Image (cartoon, rainbow over all chains, first blue to last red; front, side, top):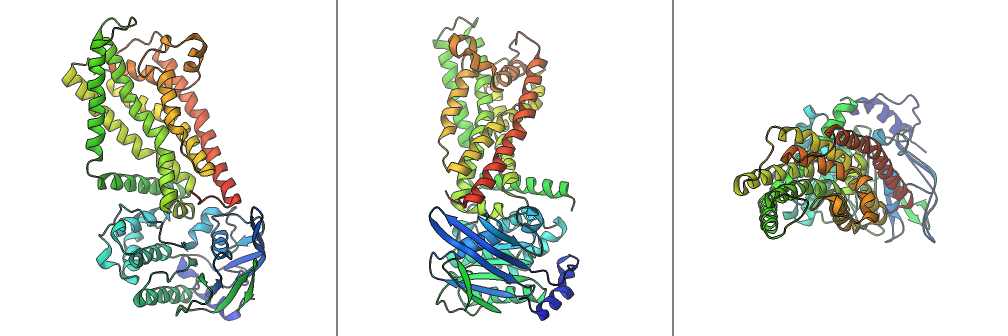
Length: 242
Length: 269
């Protein structure tokens, strides 16, 4: 269920994202209903249900290979569910693909996704352009995430010369750069030091303060100081409150 | 921003990205030029060594083959680069980022053909000037500027084949076809020798693709070699190939992305 507090917060702050508040105040920031996905004989998700309200942060835990990344990829619209319904703020990842992706920030698992030969700032400039950040706002948006994730000294360094933790900071900066309303983070604290984890926490707090929503995944048993409003365990294809 | 501005901004971003990456490899352009110049030199001496009945003189064959080598650059850029770049993006994980961007994976793949094409045009111009200055190649300077729009038209007619190979990479994750497809095209489209030398049973293949008219037209504009028919007929053939094949290849790429999203294999490599 969506909490009334979260909905009020979202409606009052939606204009900060440059969008009109939704007419339907019960509209979920992210809704997955009856979602199923098989890879060959293996059923990864089986009738999964999840609904997040604007302003919420949810954590999905689970053992390795249980389907957390598949769930995030389906929520991001990268892969399609075999069955069930996926939408964010009433948008379908297939029917409203461009608007859906505009609303979405994604941190994928691992350390890939940067152009090795480009400098950090050039990677951010590229992402800002293909994420359709208006040209006049790009510089400020890039400066903001550089500041948020302490990338000042790395901005002119090539991506292939970064440590794993530094790469993770750049990848996180890309996930938040275009002011997404919904942020999906796959193991966001991987390789981060304390200040890196604090930067993610601050970015999430800033996001939810403006009515945005986040869903992040982590292996079960991981101790983390990132903010969480709701916690789920993914097991045998479905979610249980943890 | 309007949809057109967003599209233009995305295309420019891809172009700037590819330019910056190319610039980061300091000797890439030099390597490309040296490789082209060595090919020209090799064929200059082959033209002195081999007598081909179809040509009046060694210079005539050299002019013929220089134009073929120049157009080969464009063929390689439009046919081979999209699938190769896509493989690199998949392995580097940057394709995932493009797939979740509002600009989108299909547009990104299509836009990534632009820089290699411009790069090939530059290399082609350098090769032509070198052949003219060093080997006294009689370039048809009066019609050579018309070769630029002709190159663009040829690029638009060639690139659907590159997009088809890219679609195959999306679905099957392999980029093994480009090399032999390109080798086959150079044989049937008259890059190194006239298509009239081909055996009768295969000569038909030189008339059912856009490469032969492109090579003939560009050879005519760059070197002044007589086409034996109106240049407009080749121009129209190229335009027709581009008009039919471009939407078809883009549609197939869209379908390839959709199918692999459904299968869940889109990010595999």
